[in-house]
Amino acid sequence: MHISAKIIDSIERSSWIRRMFEQGVKLKLRLGEEGVFDFSLGNPDLNPPEEFYSVLRGIIEDQSPGVHGYMPNAGFPDSRESIAKRVSLDHEIHIDGEHVIITCGAAGGLNIILKTILNPGEEVIVPKPYFAEYGFYIDNHQGRMILVDTEEDFSLNIEKIDKSITNKTKAILINSPNNPTGIVYSEDEIRELSGLLESYARKNRIIYLISDEPYREIVYDGIKVPSILKQYAHSIVVSSFSKTFSIPGERIGYIAVNPSSVECDMLMSGLILSNRILGFVNAPALMQRVVVQICDLSIDVDVYKSRRELLVNGLQEAGYEFTKPGGTFYLFCRSPISDDIKFVEHLQKYNILVVPGSGFGGPGYFRISFCVSEEVIRRALPKFKEAIDSIRR
Image (cartoon, rainbow, N blue to C red; front, side):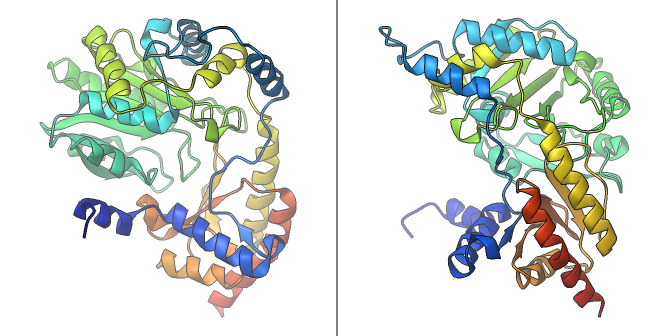
């Protein structure tokens, strides 16, 4: 083989999400778009806010010298300040632009953080189910992912997290609202987790708390995503505008560091350097200029809420079991048979594409992404019922 053996192994273990997406392409070629119910990929299908287009058109018309040139690796100062104001409002703690780095999406941001903080062999604790790429990101920087079970309803099990902490633990990485479960960790959970980590900090044992929050604005029923920055000094938030503005292909996100964190200036210097040497160099200039003008906007979350209600009610009537998601556009549903991969294959007989929970460290479940129209959901629900009825028979 002429490529890395490690990459060959990674290809074998690579994301179920992409596999199901590729399966969907094949099915659609054979059956047509209307014949396939594709709930596999979390690709936002809503249009960005109208202001996005008007701001973008104005920026494209700007022909000032150097407008498309390099900028500081951390981003344009005015863009960083704009994001800092939003973070300060969301997290109820004052953040200046100097504690913000604009990144190539949340994925780029996570890799920058992990590159900066990890020594070879150090561990990152991740509650499961978890976003399927975390293991690859941690491995990119010679770390080890330590998976920890959550409660039956997917809330955090602080006792198990505590038992998983070793002298090699460098960080805990949480994702709330969570992909794939849609769970939003409560204020009490974040307070208890922060208290645990603070008890280690008092012994001069610093463990970073990293919160991956690209779905922060996509929440329902009056739920508010609690702030880790307010609760714990050694905390880092990473997010993106992929879901907030429905622009995932534009790859624009940010890191916000708690200014009270240990050696904060050195941490920021490391993050900025990592942004450069990992090859991102800087986030896209065009999108940075857009963000600075529309940072306080969001897509219409009620569209996703309406889809969630339609899907939840239909699947409950059909006999499926799940915890109703408080955020995101995902539903993590219990498989009616123990082998979730087999049930996902069974659903394909009804032209339904979902992702097995095993790909997220949640065997026995499957993930449904409702980034599809209500019409698709309505037409799919009878098929979901046929599929579970045939299993019962």
